[in-house]
Image (cartoon, rainbow over all chains, first blue to last red; front, side, top):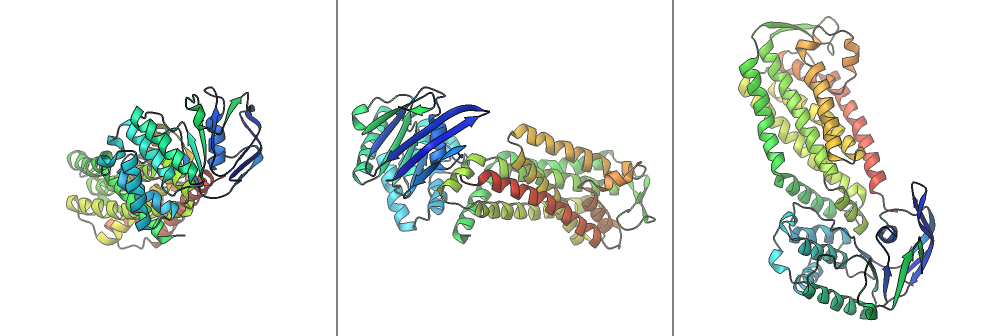
Length: 199
Length: 253
C-alpha cells in the first residue's frame, strides 16, 4: 500500500466539500479522479500532499511523494536551473544524481533551451513543464498530479503519458486529478468525485 | 537544520531580491529624494529638542535642517527595510510552502530569510549613513549608522510580522506606509515632538527609541545604550510574532 485515505472529511465555512472519502493506492498503479469544477478534487489533492489538513479522517503514505499542484507554483525571479538546484536541496538529492535527473527531464519534456531563463519569462506551457518536473525530480513512489497537462501542446501531452507509463512500470503509484480524462484506457481505475464522495 | 539547505535558500532569496527592479529603484530613490527635499526646503532656525530617552531635562538646540536630515534618514531606513522585509516573507509564500512540502524545514527557510534581512539592514544602514554624512556633519558616524540599523531591525521585524499576518500585498503595504507615516514620518519628527502633548503616547511607538538613539549619536556625547536596548526589545517582539505566524502557516499537515 502506497497511499490510504480513511474517511476524509473537509468543509469550508461549514459547507462540506469532502464527505468520508476513502481510497487506497497500490504500487505500480495509475488512478484517476474526475469531477466537475468545484467538486473538491484540488482540496483532496492538497490534503494528500500535506498542504492543508482534513477536519476528520486519516492519510497514510509510504515512500517519497511528488506533488504537482494545479497552478504552477514557482519563483518568478529565478531560472529553471536555479529551481532544480533549490528543490534538489529540499529533496536532499546529491549533485551527480541531480545532473542525471535534470538532463533526463529537460530532454524528455523538450525545454532544455529555457534552462537559463527566468520563470517570469517563460510561457505557461513551459512553466507547467517545470512545475511537473519538480514533482518528478526525486523519483517519487507516490505521484500526485492535479490537472498536470494544463497548457501542454499535443507533443508534450503524449510525452507526459509516455513518462507516466515508465514510472508505473518502475512501481510508482500515480494519482491524476482532472475535470476531463480522455485517455481512460491508460488508467487502472477512475473514480468520480461527486457531492463530496468518491464513486 | 541543514546548512546546505540554508546556504541554497540564502543564495536564491538574495538573487530574487536583487532581480526585482522595484527594490533597486526604491533603494536608490527614497533616501536620495528624502534628503534632497530636506536640503532644498528646511529652514536654518534653531529647534529646542528634548532627548527624553536620556533624561527629562536634557535638551539640545540644533538647526532644523541638521535635525531634519537625521530624522529623514531614519524615516527612509525604516520604510525601506520594512518594505523589503514584507517582500521577503510575503512575495513567494506559496512557493515557499511548496519547498516545505518537498522537505525544507520552516526553520531553515526562516533562517535564510532572517539572514537576508540582516544583510539588507546592514547594507541600507551603511548606505543611508554615508549619504546622510554627505549632507550634514555627524558627531559619531559609526554609532549613528548603528542607530539606523536599529530602526531597520525594528521596522524590518514589523514588515515581517505584517507580511506573515496579511495575505494581500496592497493591504500589507498600506499597513506599513500607515505606521511609517504616523510614527516615523510625523510623531517622531522633532519639530512636532518638541511641542507635542501626551509625549508618553509617542514613546510607545516603534520608531521612538531608534529615533532618539540616532539624534543622540548624531549630535551629542550622551550614551544611547538604553535607547538601543529598548529598540532591540521592540524589534524582538515583532520578530517573535512574525516567526510564530510563519511557522503556523508553513507547517505541513
